[in-house]
Image 1 (tube, rainbow, N blue to C red):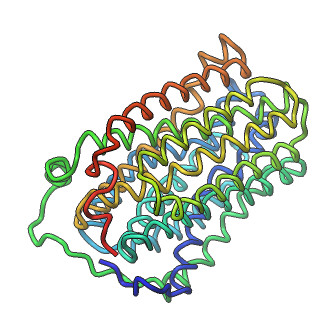
Image 2: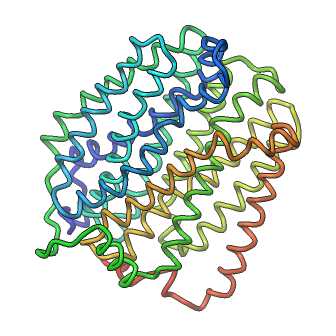
Amino acid sequence: MSTENPRSFHWPMLVTLLLIPVMAAFSGALINPTIPAIQNTFSHLPNSETLAQLVSTMSAPIVVIVAPIVGYLLDRYQRKPVLIMAILIYGIGTSIAFFLDSLYLILATRVFDGIAIASIMVTVPTLISDYYSGSRREVVMGWYGAIQAGGGAVAALFGGVIADIHWRYIFLIYALALLLVPPVIRYLPEPSVTRNDEEISRTEAAVKIVRESPVLLLVSIYALMTFTMLTMNLIQIEVPYYLQESVGVSGSMTGITLSGFMVLWAVSSAMYGRMKRRLRYTTILVIAFSIATVGYTIISATSNFLVVFFGILTAAGGIGLVVPTVNDWVAAIVKEEYRGRALSGVTTMMYLGFAVSPFAPTPLVNRFGRQGMLLVWAGFLLVITVVMGTLWWFSRGSTTVATPAADHTE
């Protein structure tokens, strides 16, 4: 249920709501430029490269497990206490790693990060859907994606600088999240949401979502989110090695490059609300994957830094459109009482892509090298684009899939 006048924004509430996703952006983006430095510190350990990458991605499988539980809690109880607890866990639990000298213990602290990020990534889009509807929700979803990416850009820049000083200081930055607790308490109201009085299990709720929602559409959206996040994280995880080993750039320049990627992602996400006024969900996604295909093709075409940098920015322009589109689409096609659980599916599949990203490209890297792997991935993106374009072409006359009835509400 919307708590806002559809013609205006309550700015303290909106600003507070949109600052929270910065925490999720910092979770991995701050660490990614320092991965080679972390590996060098612990190079005496077996599989040090994979372990160093896991510092960035270890929280992903935790998010996959925890997100559905968070979705249930949001739909059954209240949203705000879950969010406050998540911020506390994030600010305290993740910063502990600064004091640890064991890579395995550092990896263990990433469990706290996973719990907090799962709660944040499910709660914030759910609150956006509670507070706003129709075109206002589309605009705020676009800003939500843009703020995530903008926070990632700042984090990547900090991470690159810290990589040239000492990687350990990155963990102190996470404690700054605790500053968000007072404004969350002050400015975010607990939304009034219609809930069933009857207690039902998570399994029963899932069955009801399946029965009352377009199942194939939801599954397809979830699958696209997984593939998109895997595609994005290849740039965050594999490209730093590619840039430093094959292109020959420094840690700081790697951070600047990843920061540029996140800036273009932010700009692209911010454009979602304007695009959605004129285009269907499917049309936006076809455009997004087409742009990402071009970007990956450019990245893999040469070892020239400027060309690679341009390809990274191009890919960001496509990837940035996907997250707000998916969140808004899912919020539009499910009932209010199941919104938390449905959106938890988006978060689950998003972080499933993160979780497999250190391992999925390994066979391709071993066979073709990192540059060849990126070219093969461009082929995967092309296939997705062609399939989606074909579906878009044959569904042009249908409004059921592209514009659900719920999406007309203001």
